[in-house]
Length: 334
Image 1 (tube, one colour):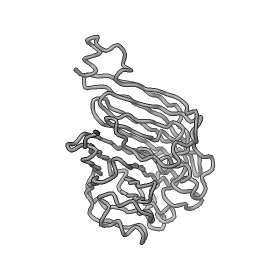
Image 2 (spheres, helix red, strand yellow; image 1 turned 90 degrees about the horizontal axis):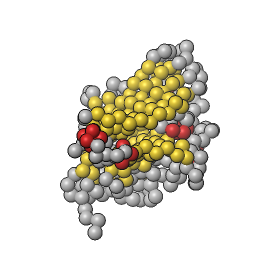
Image 3 (cartoon, helix red, strand yellow; image 1 turned 180 degrees about the vertical axis):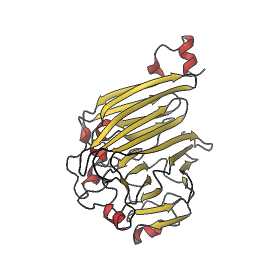
Image 4 (tube, one colour; image 1 turned 90 degrees about the vertical axis):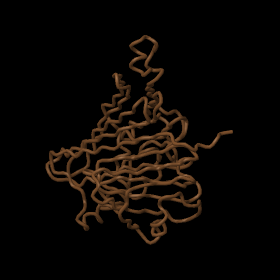
């Protein structure tokens, strides 16, 4: 019996039993005072959402198994000043952190590492549940405004968490409210760690060619599909060429954990794919990063004639989906 039938038959007293939304403020640690929205659905993904950090996604669980990597910093309030590399000091990790809207990657042209988006609070935040004969879902929406010059940018976000399947849909719309074209690089920073990103995990993507960001990253060109040994080493950043495929796809599977996670995205607005690997002790993290740019900063993209711009009054739409399913081979917990 699905949720709709259970409601119609009178066997379900309260929708909270199968699709719960909890809104609160953190009371301790670096994130004290920060708003959070926790969504938990029957037979689906449970996820924490941060309204004060652009409606980015924190830890997520499927069948009790954590999906995301959480940094040593943990849940941290947004920073007011983000010059240079300060962004890193408040990087939560989580299932997805947004980079942009003025810069992605290294500090450049007066903009700090990865821009300010993840440190801007969403307004008009709403969380609602919908039940149809096809199933139930929770949708969280909000608006993030970047007031910087040459004109403000308005970013509308919708997050849909489905009950009955391990699916989250993310839909964004970025509008240039200014009077002139603006550089608007954007990157979605998905983050995975143990137990999902640990041996015998495998990563599958339809890669045609791979470029290393720097000499230290060249070590990962032939090994990016598996978690590397935990060792003190430099981080590795790669950019993958996915050819002409209209849909991007990255599949992370760990048969020992018993899960397969797939990220899919429309490459019309997000044609590029970056990968981040940090094998250091206490890190051991994988980043999958669909984007409209690279990670060397806006000056590099400008010189390469690849800096994404948005004309005045126009809107750019991006869509991504996370799907999680069980696979055979899960190890016994006994």
